[in-house]
Length: 104
Image (cartoon, rainbow, N blue to C red):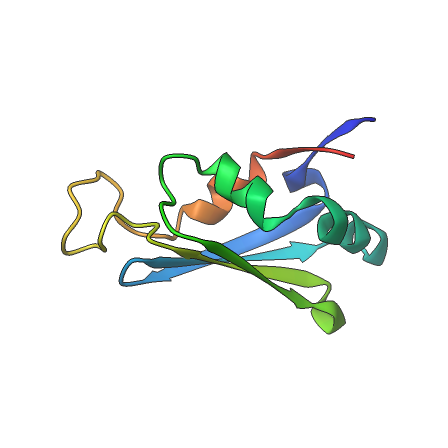
């Protein structure tokens, strides 16, 4: 088993709507996309954001784009207008996710 950083094999973008955060993860090669499909699961993402994402995490596979899309429910403490968090938006979730290390 070896450990790789997500940022070394993919890029990511994220956004938000109300209390839902959306994170797109794009592999930088077809080989790395297969690694993402196998190891970057809904549970891994939810555990990485432990304490921030209170609802379910759904994963959608976009094979033709070699990308995964994660929809994270109850992720923004009620949303930008309701939360007391310093950062109430989902834009930074992608940067946070890229710090993840995967054991492959």
